[in-house]
Image (cartoon, rainbow, N blue to C red; front, side, top):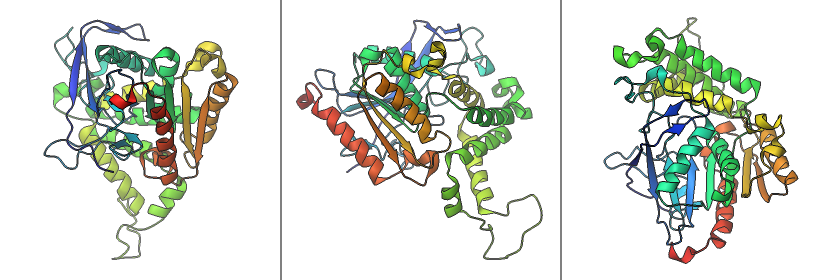
Length: 384
């Protein structure tokens, strides 16, 4: 297996207004995306990869002059990898409201000439999917071979199957859920409150003041990161090890960093605060909270999925307590009740929610086998 190598982002501007679920609209916006592989003559081998909270369009490969800029799912996507770019034409799209190029709070609001800031409209999973569908139209892709995503990306894949049932042959939902639990919403709100209560947030207009609410972003990331790891994984990596255990076996008896886990979380928080936008974090966590396709059907997920046409691949991980296997089983049960063809993998892995991003031979082999099945049935595959 080899890497895709050097890749470059592209952008596409849309002048036609996009009406959002909130009733607001974006009259003018740009989507940033990347593509890997070659679209065949029949345009039948395209795969859309949807990203999670802090990821982007940069799914695989790296940028010129920056060997550390490896795509967030580089182990999954590339030549000879489970999603093989020698067979499939893969698209990664940065969602609206993000801070990685697509129109978001950091961009100029045409109505005011200033950055949108907190005035950027709340966007939902369904809004993202509608924007992705417009990009697919512009690229001449009428139907995807598959739409795939993990976590929040899995929600987008699921929404694709309901909103545009004829536009995807396969839907791949990994480490995801049909809706957040009350506990998940609670974690998201604690993270948001950390940002909103930071004096440097300035009501969302911190750009004009030349500041960043770094303390709020640090705490938000620390809270989120705790939920991405399993207790077993955290115990194995850190346990109760002292940061300076080699020098002393004593506690410092202050409120600094004593334990390795404290050092790790603060490092993750510091790193996150340097590159992620606070308004984007608020928007994306709200999109997570609002996603509930069964709500319009009195909570009946079977009814919500009744009009789907795709075949499904659903995967979960045993120690993922953020989006537990029970949630994936709900999706599977609703699909089976609708007589959809479903492949379900529940993988015993110690890494918690982050497992969907990591190397696990069983997981990767399941995905590889499923894409082999997709490839075997792809029209015009010899032209890819």
